[in-house]
Image 1 (tube, rainbow, N blue to C red):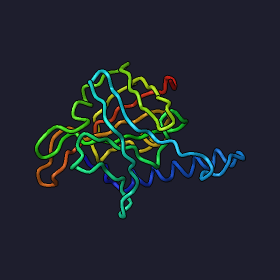
Image 2 (image 1 turned 120 degrees about the vertical axis):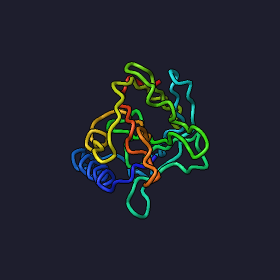
Image 3 (image 1 turned 180 degrees about the horizontal axis):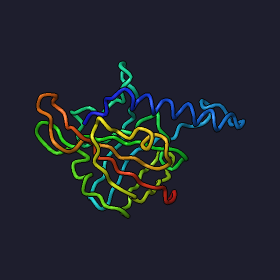
Image 4 (image 1 turned 90 degrees about the vertical axis):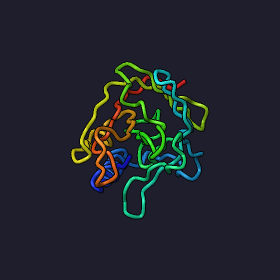
Length: 183
């Protein structure tokens, strides 16, 4: 699974800067004084999926990092996105498969509207979301603004036909989900 188009990353960074500028300084304590809350695990009951989450940043080339292929059952939370349960877009990425076996988001395309997605956080809270839609889009037409700018959870993997000349899938599967509550 490769979300490697630079403009997708640039859109995510621009969105982060825009959100920071829109929210301004509210007099909160500096970030280093507050414990950092991070997502730890994703649970999708409809797919019988429970998987650990790792942090994903940006590569040296400015692309969104991907979980390593040697950890196919692990998904990753993009640290440039919102923490699940907080306002903003929260982005979780996982591979569809490896060279030899299915990976964490192999069945993501099977998710349906109304399905529940839970994300356990390091502060003991669990953010719950309901799936609004699942779409397959060409990587050449990746909807960066919708993924990175609108509130909600975004789950992303590869899909569609495999391009043997480029050694990657031609499309992305994107799940859009709306926040329900923290538990």
